[in-house]
Amino acid sequence: MKLLILNGPNLNMLGVREPEIYGTQSYRDLEAYLRAEAEKLGCEIEIFQSNHEGDLVDRIQQAYGRFDGIVINPAAYTHTSIAILDALKAVGLPAVEVHLSDVDAREPFRRISYAGLACKMTYQGHGFAGYRMAMEFLCGAGA
Ligand code: CA2
Image 1: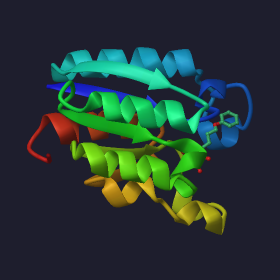
Image 2: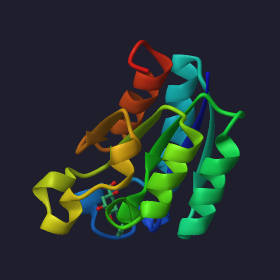
Image 3: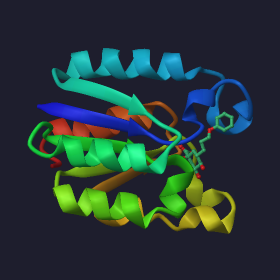
Image 4: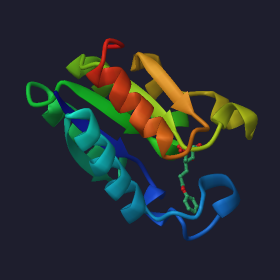
């Protein structure tokens, strides 16, 4: 089982500001966490972060035929990007949406998720653990 893990804009700034929302750990810490959890689950992962919508769309398209599933935290593009939604639909791979924070408990504009419309499951408000849950979902019986 090979999973592509995509992270959207500003997630590379984790740990730098807004620790009350996103925690104190850095993006490097998140990458290390993902690799450790993937190894425990026995799944292969590739991790990619970008601040650019088109780069995320390109990676989703390139996943077709190369990956068995996608874990995606589109960050702010969650609430704006029909391009990411269309790319997820186009490749048709099982996808799971992750948010570190509980987006439904924040500003109203964060309650809309376009990417989520193409995802089998969403984990939100669990911090880093949400990514483990997503990997478990895709590697286990959930997908
Ligand atoms: O909770 C999440 O994971 C989000 O996807 C994070 C996005 C936000 O736009 C979504 O509504 C929810 C923001 C990521 C930016 O992360 C920062 C990290 C450090 C300092 C400032 C922002």
